[in-house]
Length: 303
Ligand code: CO
Ligand code: CO
Image (cartoon, rainbow, N blue to C red; front, side):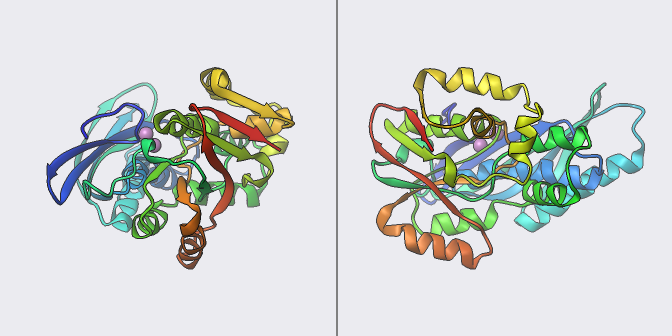
């Protein structure tokens, strides 16, 4: 077991029934509302425990706060983070902050997982179905928020998605015996797909037209609100990526770096119907976006 760089979190064997899942993540605000930012930062940090099939049990705050920021703003960020820990059932046991020029906030999270039931990137099998639990395009939408060009509806859709925990999706995943999963964050949908493809030595085939996109994501791509990370992500996946008949603006969204994205679940065909049913029953919106094939660790995107 131990530590592996391509997985969402470190998983450390403790005893036959428990392994410790350990992760940390923090970043700069993408929204003006401090409480909402705290919620998003916490949901994002907690997500890597869920992506490993674990349950968070405690968390610590990490903050970088400029000296000019009002105490009330800091308090609201911390309250936002605390509210998500409560929702996750994780104890917030402290933290540390430093004075810094750029405001940043996040958490270090510890969780438990059964040593035989965690979900690394390496357990995908040929003919697994790819199920995604949140739309993609948060990087584009965040740039759209900064540029003040997105509608109220699109703002609410993307911010509530980023603040939403992957808790229920992860619990269903574990209950249904799914063996392989990740969460979609900075490397974008294609970058995280590639991590699974390479770790499992299978090919991932994605159907671009079936991938759920946030309202206005395509429009923002066409308007040039593409984050720099999109190009870094493309460079990273390019040697293993094949694209067939997919427009550039769609590729922009598939490579878009995500904040607090959904889970990508690799589901054996015979479990698919039950998995989708259980996810919907919990109020999730799962999308079937592709499948795996025998291969050497590549990603193919089709229309
Ligand atoms: Co992750
Ligand atoms: Co992470």
